[in-house]
Image (tube, rainbow, N blue to C red; front, side, top):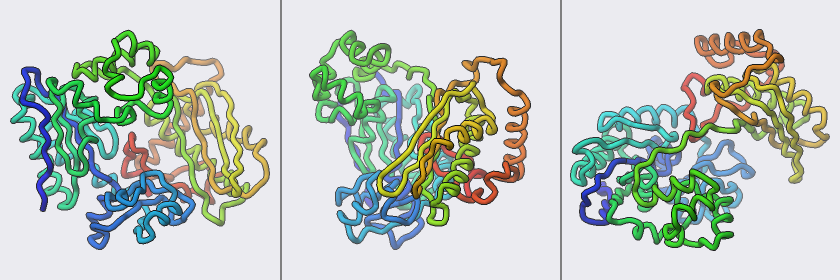
Length: 416
């Protein structure tokens, strides 16, 4: 068994290492390879359903060597690697392993934040912030993962003065890396990275940076705090300036703005009535999640993807609500404008979300609807998912099973 790679970028500095970030390598695919020895050292793609028209939700490192990326269409993946092994996702298993991993890591160091199903961060305290101690903890975590969870599982660990840079470090050496960024390394150690290697810089932000003639991380780091605030249009730019210099400033308080579900329809439901029924099931799922997250929705949208690459979508505003009935009424109103055709996939999205503490009371709210929704949630939590549901989804209640949102790990009781 190979030892994890350790990269220390500079001698220890007088400022401490404050954060450890852990990223599981090719998580879903690695779990499948752990459970099925015949898949080990093979190119593997985990897919939601066994069809060439869907996408790869995870790929093994052996598959990545062929140029296959997460999100690639299965048909394209097969062209790049005809021998790729397709595995239908087993979401319940991935959640079970997630909890095992959390337990193993917690035995080594308290977890400060679970960022997604395959990422977590730990704040280092006292003597843990020294290079020697932090490195020992990271290596202990890697060993605990192999010994307590799975002998073939690997992770990349980053150690840095702040959580942002610790996450960056995990991507600098994969798989099974251990990278340490110290204040003395900054900012030059980041210059070899691409702009999009930095968390928070996606396609839209990249275009904005290019508009300001910023094409490299070195050019970004050379910006003044004022210049960075101008590009980001506010406080995020200031935080980015500090993060790139190793300052341990907290993440800004944020809340999500949308929540949605989509589903590729099985052949027997590729009719307008079948798509409508599945859309109602998706509304039930989204409304339940919304209440669990203690959010309210002020808008609703729906879409249908038809065969032949045509599609339909529409949206409307709502009085801020949490209850399933109001959202079903919104779906019915939109569905009237849905054109004829053979549907391939359907989806719904709740828009303009606000957390409980920002919710505005309204004279138009029906408290009976909210009480009914919460009562159904309580029954389903006690007796199992879909113990009670509205009759309109009876024929499709087993369609669109709960999938994993990477940043929100579902309870095992919601997985079918």
